[in-house]
Amino acid sequence: MREEVKLHLQKQMLNENLTFKQKISLPKLSQELGVSITPIREALTQLEHAKIVEIIPNRGFFLPNITGSEAIGIYAIIAKLESLAVANSVYSKSDILLLHKLQSKIGSSKKSDEILKLDLKFHDLLIQNYDNDTLKSILHDLKIRIFLYECSYTRDSELITKSSSDHTNIIELLRNGDFQEAAKLVEKHWSLSIDFVKNGF
Image (cartoon, rainbow, N blue to C red; front, top):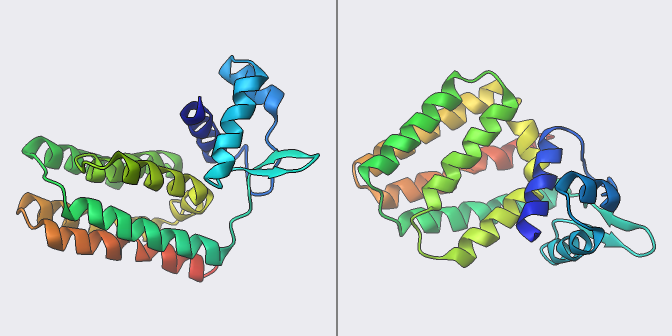
């Protein structure tokens, strides 16, 4: 249930139905997910431990505000962890082909929400072969915390062009078996998001 609630909150953010400091309605979540309030409350409590939601006594559950400095810190951790995963992974020809197809779709899409979904899939694929489920779970939780920043990022066509260029270069390095250089580029790639936050979100 934790993952279902987390993904539902992510969808709400993507659709601009949930933003920083906004209260999360348990009855509404219960109705939308088709389960009782008790497991919803338990799932949100678990998400509070990962700082994805915030509990305010006598008021309820909220989407916490993530300041620019906090977001920059989170992005720096994401960069390191994703780079580590890439450096210690092996990629098949089918993996490379799928990465290329995802990037082609990103390059041809004009819809920011679609670009964001494809970008998430691209980065998920980059780390899927890394044999460390704990790291993957941590990365996923961290990316949920800065998801609203990513929503704004993908509305900037210039940044998407730069991001796509990085993706293409990462794919080429992986195709050539140069996983260490690919990992370095992955870490550098996240600096685009860091600079985006520094420049005013």
